Each structure stands twice: as C-alpha cells, then as structure tokens.
Image (cartoon, rainbow, N blue to C red):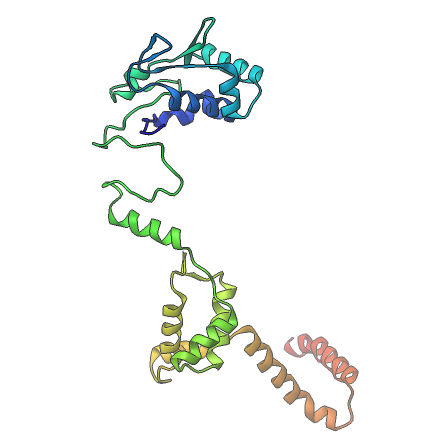
Length: 269
C-alpha cells in the first residue's frame, strides 16, 4: 500500500478524535479506502470504499473481531462510514470521501479528509518528525524550529573550566560564570540561552574590562553568594579578633551585642 490521503484539520475537534480507539479505526478506514475504482471478486468496489473481512481486519488492528465490529457500528452511527455485508465480504463506504479527497469539501463535525486551500500540493498525514514550514511562517519560524530541534544542553562546571582552559580565560571566572547562570536556569533575560560558549566569551570580556570603565565597574560589583559569604566571615572575624584576644568568649560577645541593641533605642531617645 502506497500513496497519501488528505486529512481535514477540524477533525481534531470531532467526537471521533476524542476517542483514541475510534480515531485509530477511522484512520484505518481512510488508509484502506480505494483511491480509484477496483474490482474485487467480480464486484466493482468504487473509490472511497473497500472490502474486508472481520477476521483479517481484527488481525491488522490487533483487536478482537467482535470489538472491531462494535466500533465500526459506532462509526456508522456517527455518520462516518456505511457498512454493507454479504456472504462473501463486508463493504465499507467512507462517507463524503470523494468530496473531501478532491479538496473542495466544507467543514463539518465528522472526521473527514480535506485539502488545505493554502497549499498547492496535497500533503500526507503530518509526521512528528516533519520540520517543514509554510511561507506565512517565514524564516523566523524556520529558525525557531531549528533551535527547538537542537535544544539547549546546560554545561557542567568541568565543561566550563575546559572551555576556559582552551580559550585562555581566567579559571577563577569559570566558577563565577557557572554559578551565576546555573542559578538563573541558564536564562538570558526572559529567553533561554542558545549558545553558552558565546555567553562565556561575553562574560570574560566584561570581567577583563578595565576597572575605570562602566562595564568593568559593573562586573566588579557583581559578587557570587560564596564570595559574599566569605567576605562577611572575614569581616566578622576581624571585628571579633581583638575581643577574643582579650579573653572574651563568643557567649560574652553575643551578650554584649544584645545589651548594645537594647540600649541603642534609649540613646536615640
């Protein structure tokens, strides 16, 4: 079996599409329907129809014969197909097949096939791997789909360090770059980062900028959490060191701080 069928987009809103079992069965009917008149066992089977047997159909679909028949009757009740049985085979007619496969159908609530007016060439059922875009989407859509296909893979710290080593960047900036963007979820503003090596290069340009420039001052003012924590510890140790050398314990220092906090409001009043 080869060739293609046309599929009407509004099928996604139909009752049949909401039921995966019925949609699977109706799709099977579309695939099996003749695209031109054929003769089967001396009987003319017109375009849009096909002959089948219950057992063969059930085997192709991987379901029980009774289940196949019950679901086919549901499709018939919904106006999607017509079933005609005789002693030799069952004839299935897909309703409105000719109207919609010719590309001049009108929308309705039944899952049917249809040609899109904006496309001069009939398309097959869309495959998940299809990356083609219409002219209306333009180059922007193509670039966005390319980025989505490739995806962004965040580097680990060792990868960033290797990149810095290769490019001759200062190694101490590798961890700062990694911690900064890792904490932001590798976002640049409101957008996901596309190429982290380029972001790393920009980071290094700013970090190596002279301190007397606005870019250099901004980068020097940016500190990581670890840097601020280390700075605060050093400052605290420097303030407490004279008292510790004088024989005071940390408990004494804490009590003195609490007393100073209590007396501060009275001094201000």
